[in-house]
Length: 113
Image (cartoon, one colour):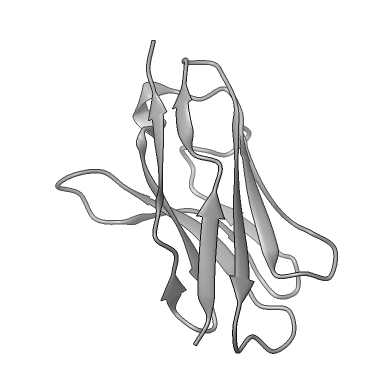
């Protein structure tokens, strides 16, 4: 079973930056697609960014130009660099292993002055 461990959440002021990381382990064969989603209370989990096995990327319109998803070379560790953060980015962020459907435990991001 694929396990995902996230890190890097926290409290940041509007306009600031955070970097989230997610490492996949256990039963993973080769490079996998990975993604970041986020969820706020009362709302459905929504896609933030995807990085496929072939390193194609896809971003939610709300984060384009501000967030960047990347992978450590040859490893199933992905990062989400979040710049110019807004209060609307406040959420619990979850990592997902695309081919396995596994989820991480979530990491809280709070953007507030």
